[in-house]
Amino acid sequence: MRAVLALLLLALTAAPAIAGSTALKRDADGHWRADGRVNGRRIQMLVDTGATLVALTPEDARAVGINVRRLDFDTRVETASGTARAARVTLERVQIGGVRVRHVKAMVIERGLSTSLLGQSFLNRLETYQVRGQLLRLQD
Image (cartoon, rainbow, N blue to C red):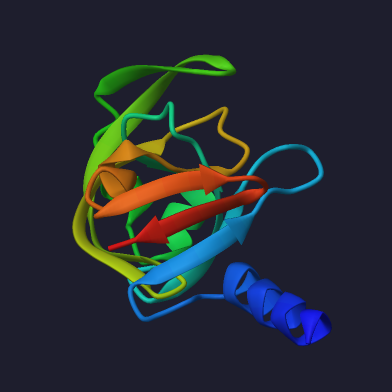
């Protein structure tokens, strides 16, 4: 009986629990990475609760259908790599597992960002997000 309960608990914590929620397991390096969909196209993002906005690399921006050449990189931002230029954009849809948010404010960082970031402009639109042990649960 204990083995069945343990398996059930593992299934509930390791996979999306219900529509509109998902759980991400912390990587060995201590970060949460999410295989997301932005505007319907897959990209990998690092969850960054300290980032004000979702931030995309130019490569990921192109992959989700943004014409990077037409952007106006008129905003200066501080990143972990130093000061960078950024262009403001609005993403039609951002989805992580069963969690979906529309019209998400974001920035495309011109240089110096090695991976796209899932920041507060997405996280603050959720009903809740919480850390429990090695899991980050998102619910819209």
